[in-house]
Amino acid sequence: MPVVLYYIVFHYIPMYGVVIAFKDFSAMKGIMGSPWVGFEHFELFFDSYYFERLLKNTLLLSLSTLFWGFPVPILFALLLNELREGLFKKSVQTLSYLPHFISVVVIVGMIANFTSLQNGVVNHLLVWLGFQPINFLSEPGWFRTIFVSSSIWQGFGWGSIIYLAAISGIDQQQYEAADIDGAGRWRKMWHITLPALTPTIVILLILNAGSLMEVGYEKIILLYNPTTYETADVISTFVYRQGIEQANYSYSAAIGLFNNIINMILLISVNRLSKKLTETSLW
Image (cartoon, rainbow, N blue to C red; front, side, top):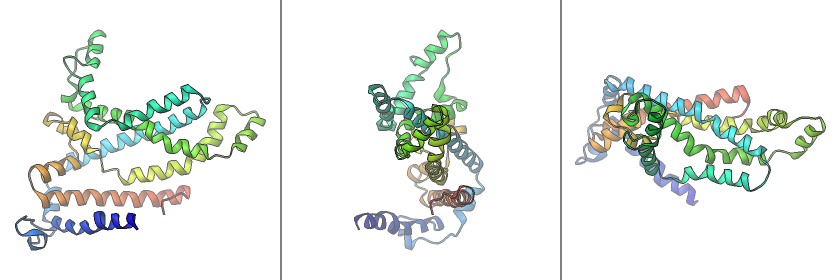
């Protein structure tokens, strides 16, 4: 009951506020007292100069993170499983989990220090190799690389936990039978471990697809600046600027609602496709 009440009070009841996306909201008049404007805010967003750029950047950052970041925890879990029990294996696991517990603010501070034009380790290395120093955080072309690589580093260890848990549930008799048949480590990994992980991989892929449009805007807000808006500005950061900084509540609510509807469509579509292809789905 506490869990049910939590979702009712903090997730379902506040959803009535979504109606401001269809109103010209005024704090003085309140939600119900503000006049209706229909789809005016949606049309304004779709016709704006920023729409194509925001949609493009959101999809590119999300798909890049999914494409490069999703397989890494799987590979790490498979390789870690092949290590023999001991201090080295436990140390590797612990070290891989640590970045997950570092605050996003600290992560961004580390990135800023490492890529600093004056004292950054990366630029010192480039100069030592004979290249010119690069102001990474002010170059639009470098933003996606920095964002995706730092996200992978921060999350791959923590993301591997669920795969390691799934591996621990595999019947050991299958490995014993493979040993009798003369299978090596790679054969057992390919024919036993990976197939056993497939349902878990599919479920997590569906969940990731359902949040494809929800890029980690906290890190983007801390990392980007007007010089990198060209590649860094996404829908969630635009909503933040319009809603919090400029107080365009109805306009930002409309954009956020559009973003969430796309996520819902993606979740349902990928789930249905997975059910047909793999017979594994969320429902």
